Length: 194
Figure 1 (cartoon, rainbow, N blue to C red):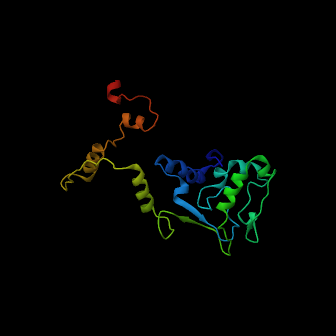
Figure 2: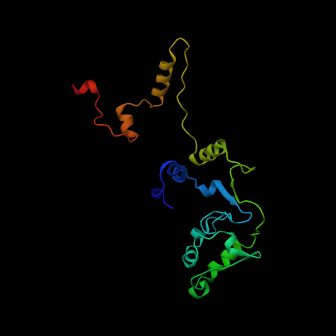
Figure 3: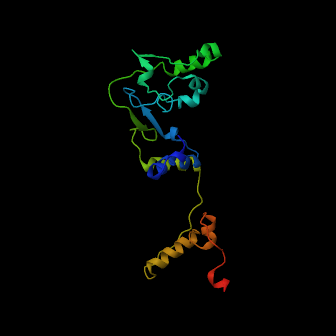
């Protein structure tokens, strides 16, 4: 589903995928679905096998699927994979893809319980901001050190903060605002215009 169809808070949540990609990560690198009953997991759209999203890994087979929004539970009957194709994959030269898909599914065993998302950044499966920050820092590489400032108790706090922000080029001057994508009429200061 594209982010264009989502509005409000859900749009912000969905846009996290793009924000994380800017740092060289993919949501699939962070979360994995642990399937129990398979009732709440989409067979083709969720990363539940561990080797990636099946529709991306097997696009030709996905095209042949008769029910693209099926759950994992819909595709397993008595512990074995149940096929629902519009055409036979073997007749279309997709036997190798079928064998590979069946190999991916060979260790799947459904059980009683709710499906749940696990974070792959921690051994306990719980998501923490700290773990994500460490992962982003690993991909981003070393950052240049921030300028140091000696905080003075005699100087008002707002002046200390202003100097600290100035050393980081974080003062919202017109050039800085324009660089950050804020639309302003002119970069010339108001005093210089007159």
